[in-house]
Length: 159
Length: 287
Image (tube, rainbow over all chains, first blue to last red):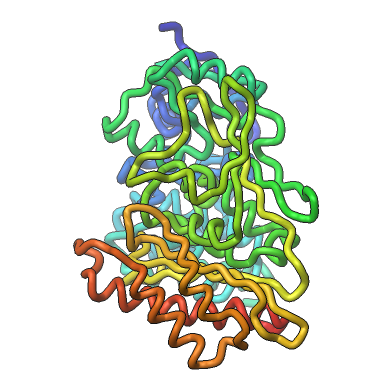
C-alpha cells in the first residue's frame, strides 16, 4: 500500500510527511517529525498527554489520524515558547514547581493556554473542569490548578 | 487499511456499499480507540468531514439540522441551538473531556449504540430524527429507531447518518438532561434521563417526553412517565407519579457501576429533577 502524502501546517510552518493510514497524528509528530514533546500516555483519549490544537480546537492527537491533518493547522507544545522566551504558563510551571515527572506537562500547558485564550479570567472550577481530561499522577493537581490561576491573573495584569 | 476522503455523500455511500469492512470516521473518539486496541480491523476508513454540510449547524423549518461531523464543543458554543434545546446540548457536552469534546459527535455517540450514550436520551425526548444516506438515496428515521442493542444499529449496508434534525418547537418549551456518575467528570452514565416539555399559556404541561439511558439494552422512551406530567405544573404529586413510572420502566443490569435496585431508584430521582429543570426553563426562568 502506498503511503499517504499529507500537507499541513504545524506551529505556523508548512510541513509535509508520508504516513500509513493507521498512523495517528501523535505517531507522525513523534516518530517522523521528531516533535517528541507530545506524549503517549493511554492511547485511548483519557489522559491528555498528547493534547494538541487542530484548527484551533484541543484534541488528543492519539485519536486523530495523521492523514486527517491534510490542509489543517496543528499547534503543539513545541510552538508554545517564542524562541528562547517561555510562555508565562511554561515559566510559572517551572518557577512554582507545578510538575514532577513531566509526562503530563506538555498536554496540560497546551490545554491551559487554550483555556486562557478563550477565557482570561477562569474560576478554579472552570480550570478544573477544563483540565479534567489531563491526568497527572504525581502532583495531586493542586499546584497545577493554582499555577494556571496565578498565570491567568499575571497575564491580565492583575497579579 | 485505506484512508478515503470522499467529497460527496454519493461517493461516501458508494465506498461503504462496495466494502463491507469500511468504517465511517467523523470525530474518531470511539473508532480510533477501537482501532488502536485491535478490537476492529477495518479495510478502509471513510473520513466524512470533507463532505459539504457535515460540519454545519443550520436552521431548517424552524428547527435545527446538525451535521454528522459537528463536534459537541461546537454545539456548546452555538447560542441559538443552546437556547432552543439546552437539554440536547448539555447531554452532548457531557461526553468525555475538553479534548474529546473537540472531536466527538452526537451521531457517533448514537451509532456507537452504547446504552449509556449521554447525547441520546435528549435527542429521543426531543423527537429528533436522523437523515440516513445510502445507495438507494436518503431516508429520515426517528433517533430511537437507530440503536437496536448494545453495539448494533438498524443501518443497512452502505448507509451512514448524515445529520440530526431537531424539530421546531412551540413557545414555552424546553428540555433538560441529567446523568448520575460517581465522580464529577469523565465517566459513563450509570443512569441518564432527559425530559422535554411544552407548556400551555397557564403554565400547565401540554406535551411531555421522558427518555432514560443506561437502564436497558438501548435508550428508552417512557410515555407513561411523560403522561404523569400532562396537565400539571410539575407539582410534587405529578413528579412522584413521574418518578414511579420511570423507576418501573427501567430494566437495568447489575454491573460494577450500579446495581439494578440503585439504577431503578436513580431513574426516578433523575426524572423528577430533569422535569423540574425543564419546567423552569420552559417557564422562561433562569435555571
